[in-house]
Length: 231
Image 1 (cartoon, rainbow, N blue to C red):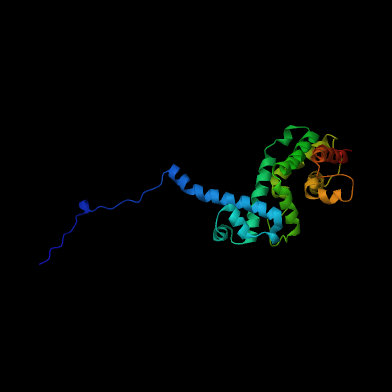
Image 2: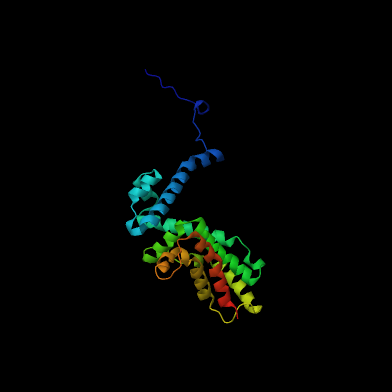
């Protein structure tokens, strides 16, 4: 007769699942995070070069060193990737602009710091100009992230409205003022050299491709805005 050997509970060996510690967990996610960053960087370059319509996922995948299938896995479609790039860009811009305490300065100085901040973002992140231009060409129903970047931050807008209101109370800025129109005009005036400067240079004798002219525009445009707001 065959004998069956039974293991008692005490002699049964069950291997407990191993839980990653914090350092191992971070290390395991690092390649995925680095891959996403490479995709977004390559996508910024390609979208700025060719726009949404002309950009190719194959080119983005090759530059990022990943497969096209991986891009589909993370973002679904080309518009989905485009939205991710625009969202990341606008979020970074808003975070950058929100750091300064405009309220701690005089109304004119506070508004000047904000507009200089807008200008300097285009210098630091050259791809922003191409993204903004391309957003203007797209259907906002298809690409809901394509909005005026600054208007995506109600808190920042509230702070700037307070700066302008304080300027009106002090008699520095005229009344009445339509706040959304005022900020929109100020941002367009300041950043227009990046998004429409080349077209303007075809009509008037001012070369926006010249670095010295760009730096001149940084102060001139803000001075122009402030002079328009004075009583």
